[in-house]
Image 1 (cartoon, rainbow, N blue to C red):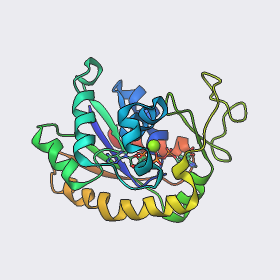
Image 2 (tube, rainbow, N blue to C red):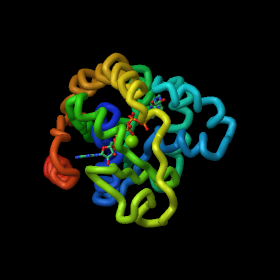
Image 3 (tube, rainbow, N blue to C red):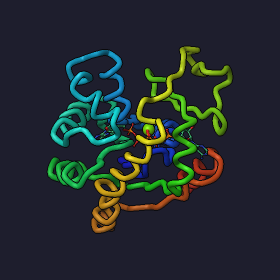
Image 4 (tube, rainbow, N blue to C red):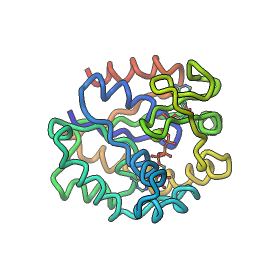
Length: 212
Ligand code: AP5
Ligand code: MG
């Protein structure tokens, strides 16, 4: 199974990805999580992308394609994948197609932008795993600690309100054209819009039903 998760920042891609990747036994490949790991480790890649990510704009297409094509060489990605936050621009989607990598499903999680600002300003993340919480909507068992490792959670620099608004603009301009791009690849690619409102479990159910 090869799945692309589309959806604005804060729509719940990372949250839903945990369940989808377990259910279908496919690796959750989040370019955002991979880049944040690189920043945390202070690698050359991390140093290169940190200020771009912090300001809420996209890093270069060539760099992203290199990261993705490398990741797809690993054994766990041979039976399928779940892309989260990739592709994000028309050139990335075209490069993927040129590499003869085509998704079975494109799931677009749809949430009104007003709600997204609340979701992101209250988000807390476990950097090592990408596990995601929310102070109000999805709190960890113990305040500010990851449920599985008990390591501290962090507030992403790009989740400050002004930067969230910038990210939504970038999504509108550069990522939303991918909806028409994938709709035009039907029937080989199935584009499904999923209502991302309601409880995390309700959205889970909608996604699993849509894929069944
Ligand atoms: P990335 O990490 O991909 O960020 P994003 O797309 O902006 O999306 P988020 O991770 O912020 O949101 P999400 O949809 O995963 O929401 P979540 O599940 O956490 O990218 C970061 C940066 O990296 C980019 O700005 C760019 O610079 C760079 N980058 C990455 N990929 C790139 C690419 N391909 N090309 C170029 N640059 C790239 O949920 C949000 C919150 O809501 C959480 O707190 C969660 O608990 C809560 N929540 C989730 N579902 C619900 C629900 N149903 N009800 C209530 N609360 C909920
Ligand atoms: Mg995410």
